[in-house]
Image (cartoon, rainbow, N blue to C red):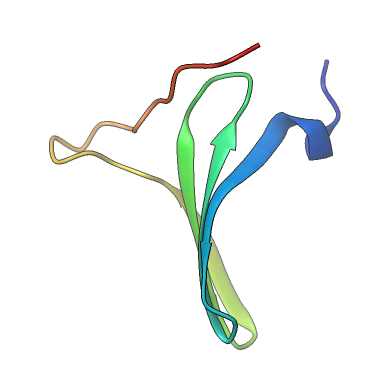
Length: 60
């Protein structure tokens, strides 16, 4: 089982005060969007136009 810090990879980052990032789960390939503004933030799966999670191919 992978350690949590090895499981997720940040593939995109934008902003400093209002931060938007995309993280990929290295085990499942599912993409997540993280957004933070001040002391608030949230994480959710990144969805395609059909409402299904975006899944990247996993490179070993």
